[in-house]
Length: 269
Ligand code: DGL
Image (cartoon, rainbow, N blue to C red):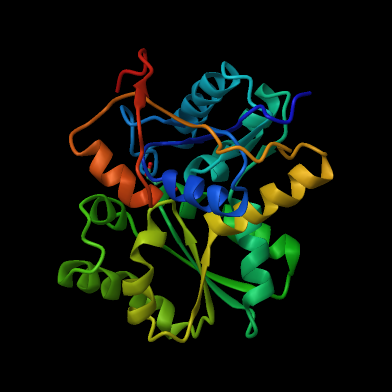
């Protein structure tokens, strides 16, 4: 098995670039192939059945690139279709739920954890289940925040409207006296400042993508799969559609220039 083979990362769209950003930060020598299903985003409001079908197809795109590991950047897919990807791929698969839950369990002092995500992620109860498995004494309080996705994509990361909506969504969680909150969606790390401000800076924010990058790094070590080359890595980006403003938004999520983006056909909405 060659360790220079890329890590495959997939997401429902552009948001997973926040996870690529975290991976590149923790693992600066790893080659990465990214697939974003931009033609069919968002997955958040879709039924689990449809998301599972999409996840299988997304996995096949990455397997076509001879990846050594698959990282499911999308919280919604990780919540409802981790088993689909694991069954399909003969390589190790990492979703974002368990690493995010582990980081939250480590952070909470009062054992009161808030979880925010898409409707699909929240309805699945994947985070509460994972947290209960890690520490049955932890109490969880979940809230779907679907409007955060278009707001982040619009670049309204520090905007009055975003703050108002954040207050509306997060107020019930403040009443529960949470001390930790899981940002259970690829887009939410972009809204960290607003979320933290609305929670009066007293709540620890857990970025599930960041936590996942740590898990991936440990797993690569354990499996002796880390790329030993110290050359500049090759980051390749594939999407099922190149919508308007794709590069501009993508670079905001990735935190660097995107370079060439390739379109994969056959993923009609
Ligand atoms: N990537 C999705 C997630 O992390 C958010 C966008 C969508 O709804 O597809 O759950």
